[in-house]
Length: 457
Image (cartoon, rainbow, N blue to C red; front, side, top):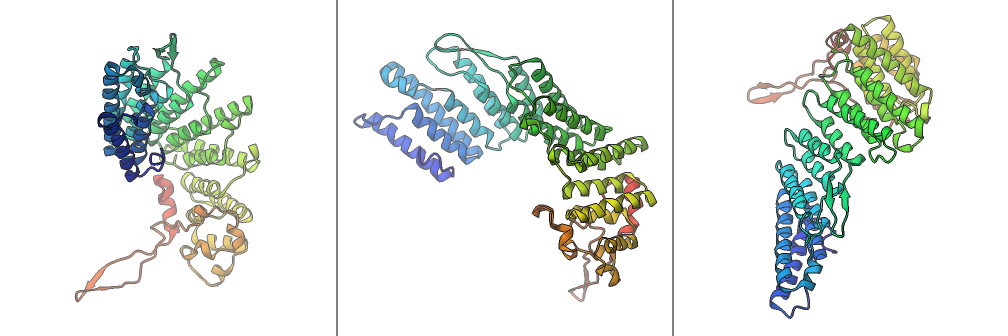
């Protein structure tokens, strides 16, 4: 047990060596030491913790040895057979080994073990039947496999689980297996990571099924939580095939708010990440037509204002301001209205001490260079303007500490785009590399192109 819990491959090898020694003493020694089902379970778990395809094969081989030893004990020593009787734990551990293996065949291997459990559940001498853990781990194996159809295969298992399959118990009665929140969340997350064109639609449909099940069944075990909503929001926000995704994301967020207000559970309380994902979806709606861009901007303003009002005790963070400024740059044409709105946002951002790398990056896209330098001076940072510096030369670390005091460490980075940064060029002269002064491009030249193309330049 001590070896099994440490995780690395040498520990799994040592656990296997001990198991083999116990089997040797049982077969050729005085028989005082015999491995039990727990001995096999701990060894399988040790290989599961390794997380490789070889480890998963080893775990499955140990399961085969257990089944062989059990069949042999049934014929020779019925008392010892009771100690060796396979159970769900050993089978689920092997499925988990495949789920952690990262193998392309992990889903197929895991599902074949599930099918074998279904077969053994009909044989009275085995105390084995699939349960919710079995199905969830098998779903995870498909999702982690990297198989091109992994989300579809995983959802296929989920649909089977939604039929509430039943398996006979050893002492009579039936085990009714039902899906839980994890079952859905694993598949939704798989769709969120998928590159298939309609992956966001599939993720959203699963969320709708969860909400309907939860609202119609008082004993439902599939109530959505923050992870569920966040995964669906992420799938919609990054989708290139979903039209009017800003409105769809806002609709999902509103469903989350309604669910939270109905039961007050912390599981469904919206967080700032959910709001930021909606803002991100708005910012990347620029590829749509004028109507979609206009509606996306409206959604962004509404969502950001909810944060500013302190709804649910939330407030904007550095990412919120950065995304909102990205909305200005991507969704609004250059002009006085964009300049005014972006300037107000940046001023509030400075006052809140939330100027992060993305915020600095996006304000330079929104404003012409000189107006950006003047805005910095108005906010209390007049040194760059007085020194006659270029807009692209201003670094986050050079801003007053008051501008960045409330930014999380991960957002305290200069995110200057390639367009702003000096470009390295190579020039070979007489067999040597000669350094050239980089050519700097003014960010103001990119503003109109960014808005027109909808690309995050």
